[in-house]
Image (tube, rainbow, N blue to C red; front, side, top):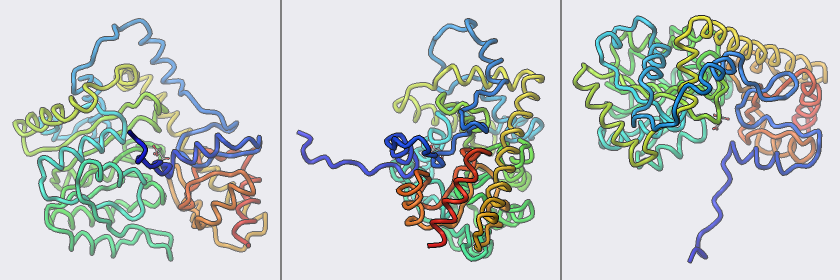
Length: 398
Ligand code: LMR
């Protein structure tokens, strides 16, 4: 019956984890998937999350959540994204549902776009997180790429970006990484965001912010939402995909939020009802546990402050690993410029290594990363950084 079914290609990110797991050499290193590790290479459960778990334990039945998810979770999430005093929240202009983390939020939006923004394309940055393409492809929405990263300067291609905004059909959806761009670690400055916002307003484009790393760029959740707040202040209608996978370390709980800023309360209510209509046949309703944990943390000021401190701690450890990796590469005698490793922000270093170099790292050094040369800095620590630098030097000097 299924004799004609071909093996699907491995996922460019999660497929790396499969290769890593299959490697039996004890010195192996997984710098593929963006999942935070401590200085001993171990996964971390935040103290704020442990405390929330204690408070939640035994306090709830295991009933279904409503299709749209936990109400308190949603109201805390949109405040975190738009700001406590955002006018669009006070005016009831925001439609929002709990989602299955970042992927789930993007997929809900993509399906919504297919139904209610017919004929529009989604413009996706080049490069971007590989799953973005799959999500819009499976939702049946046509996508195009916009220029984002300039390899020569290892920085933002602002001119290319602005030109692509100008030439995209009016009313296109632009997928933007709110902060800590994945994979490049290159973000627009606030002034550049203002320019981008004005350019998109002029063309009537619809921005969708994918915010998978709030807190991971600067260590400050408000500062990391600056892009969204700038667009809001300019009066954009927009959408935001939030994930708590990275910033609360709730990866496997699949907890996120999709919100859409509408013209008024009536529209927000209609849009929210349609998001629920899309969710119901897809997964019925979202999972309960992670949403309870997030709500406990965000509703309790002490826990929230503890969480802020812990996010900053994770962001700071990554920043210090960037400096150390650069230093070790220089000490190893690499003549190449590695300043971009410390210039970039967020969880990843976009190293500039070629797919062949990445293959050599895996084959000769048991070090795994995505073939676009992206290093998950979250997997680098004081114990493995030296070996990583030596190996990078070896494969880049060949
Ligand atoms: C990543 O980019 O490594 C993460 O967002 C994990 C994923 O699901 O791909």
